Amino acid sequence: MESDVIFKALDDFAIELPSWGFANTGTRFGKFIQEAAATTTEEKLADAGQVHAFTGCCPTVAMHVKWDFPCDKATAAKYGVAIGSINPNLFEDQIYKHGSLANPDAEVRAAALQHLIDSVEIARRMGSRDLSLWFADGSNFPGTANIRQRRTWFKEGLKAMHARLDPDQRILLEYKPFEPAFYHTDIADWGMSLLLARAAGPQARVLVDTGHHYQAQNIEQIVAWLLSENMLGGFHFNDRRYADDDLTLGSIDPYQVFRIFHEIRHFEWETGTRVDIAYMVDQSHNLKPKIEEMIQTATMAQELFTKAALVDHGKLAHYQSHAVLIDAEECLKNAFATDVRPAIREWRKSKGLAEAPLEAFRASGYLERATRERAERNRFSVSSYA
Image 1 (cartoon, rainbow, N blue to C red):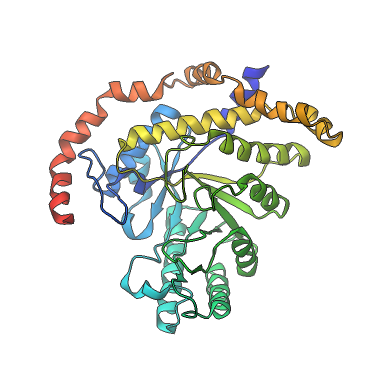
Image 2: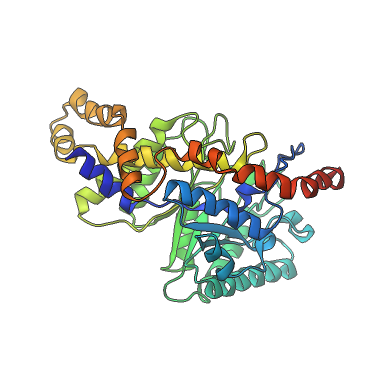
C-alpha cells in the first residue's frame, strides 16, 4: 500500500531544470571555471537531458531570454527534454542601473516593457506556458526613490504585459527581500508579489523562491496562505544557510522542503483538487560538478515529495481538530523519517531507469566526453573573464 502511494506520487511529480545551472556562473566576486560546463545553449539542453534520462522527473528546461536564445523546440527534443518557463532579463543591461519597470526614465520603462512583450512572443513560439519574472528594481539609499510611484509603474507595466498573454499563458511573479537593492526592493515579499499579480490580471500568480526570505521565516506558512488565496503559481527550489545561497536542494534543511510539500498535499486532500504548481530548480554552482549536482537535487526532490505523500491526512486532521499536539506532530515526523529510497528504486526499475541515477551517470562516460569537447573553450573563458 505504501509503495502504491509512492509510485503514484512519483508518477505525478516533475521538476524543471534551469539552463543557467549547467553553465559557468559565479558570484559578484568571481567564478571558478569547470572544464565540462556547457558553453552553448545546445550543450545546456544536452546536459539537462542527461539529468532527465537518469532521474525521470525533469522533462523541461527553464530558458533565459538573453542567455539562451535563439533556440528552438527541436533542439530540446533532440535531447529528450522540452522548453519550459521563459525568463526575461531585466537586470543586466546598463539601462537598468536604476531599475526596469520602476525606472524613473520613461524610455527605460518602455524598453523593459517591450522586452517583456518580446518574451511573451518567445514563449508563444516555444509552446511555453509560464513566464517567470524576477526584478532587481529597488534603491540603496533612503530618499533616493519614490517608493509609491514605483509601485504604480510596476502595476502599469505588468498589466500591459498581461494584456499580451495567450489564454493559457501565465505570469509567475517572484519576490526577493534584498540584493542587489539593499535599502528597498520594489517586490520584496509575497504580499507585494500577490498584490501586483492581482493588479496584473487573472493569469498572474506568485512564484516562491525558497532562498528569497529572511532567516527563520516560515515559508510553508506563506505557501499555505497563497494556496488559500489561489495565488501560488510555482517554486524556485534551492537551499540556503544565510540568504540567497543557491545551495543544493535539501543540503541544509530538507525538513523545510518536506513541510512545503506537505502543505500542498494537505491542501489538495482537504479540497479534493489538484493544485497547478510549477516546480522549478534555481541553482548555480561554482564548486560542485553541475550535472551531478542537478541529479542530487532532482533525486532529493523526489524523496521529499514522496515522503510528504505518506502523511496520513485523515489522522492529522483529527489530531489537529482535537489539539492532540504530539500525535499531530508525529504524523509529519513519521512520514519524514520513512526511508522511501527502496520504493523509489523499484519505481525506477518499473520505468526502465537506472536504480542509482548518480552512479549510473558517472558510469556513462558522458562527463569525460563533455570535458574533452569543452575544456579548451572553458579554459579560454578563464582568460577572457579576467
